[in-house]
Image 1 (cartoon, helix red, strand yellow):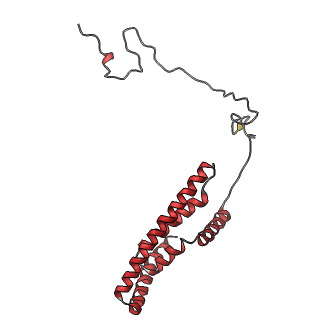
Image 2 (image 1 turned 120 degrees about the vertical axis):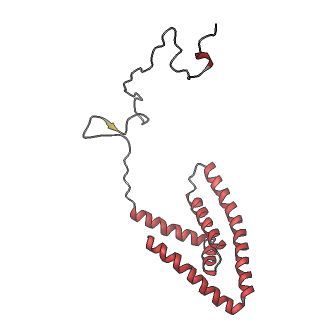
Image 3 (image 1 turned 120 degrees about the horizontal axis):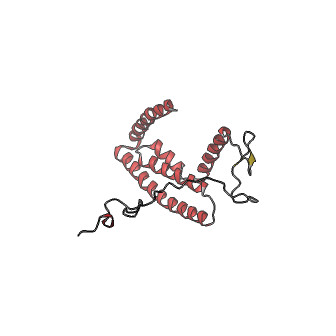
Length: 183
């Protein structure tokens, strides 16, 4: 993974410089700069519009007690799109604009979901089960339907009893009430 990041950090700027040179040779220096600035302006407007829309959808899902997984993924994609669009270059701008298109985000989410499922090792059990090595049940029965709700335990009182001339042990040191009265 680290090697791929190293290649990306080297390859992306080289590709961007090559594309800048080609586009600048075709349309000219100032037009190339104008296109880069224009894509940043359009990207920030799209980011604002779609970002607000996603925030409202997240709020609606939370109010309906639904987990807004897709909306959170869309939000991450929009943050990445904004970063790509603020990075000067035509290749990064293309990737940034692609992340604004919902079907492309859905395809990426599906691909990532398949990768996660392929690597997942999920084990699930429902309800308490007796541990064969002990006589205890795990997880404990409290909170389960049919459980008696009783928790067995032991305790020991570790507070010290105050002597008649001493302040209680739970008072803070330096408190005005701990000082002996002045004659």
